[in-house]
Amino acid sequence: MAKQIVANTNRDLIVSMNYDPTGEAWVELFDNQPLGWAVDDVDIAHPLPVVVGSLPPVAADTAPILSPQWAQYSGGYIVVPDVVRLPPAEFFNWLKSNNGANREVRSSMKSTDLNQAYRQWSGGA
Image (cartoon, rainbow, N blue to C red; front, side, top):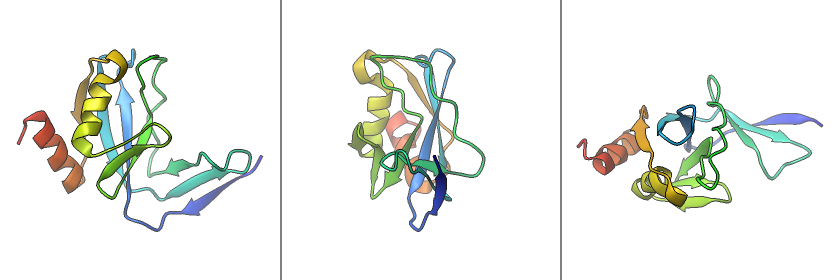
């Protein structure tokens, strides 16, 4: 098994999600510019983003509630690979309530676009 880092050449952002210990009470969103993608030759279809620092830990098992570790913001959509592709406000709704969830969604995002979308969604104008 070998891994390689493929450099990032676009302006996409990685939105990482940090959950409370149960994974169900709250989630806090952070955004980072990806430096590249870690690609494992055994599973090239599922690269992981490489960011300054580290991604938050994977959430506790919250099935059937989906609790992704990260998503990619690209072209006006937040994408959890193989799961959802939604505009930011719809993504925040999905994260808050998918499959019966009732989570508080918090933001520590710095991107102007994502921060503005979150503020409008949350009523924090």
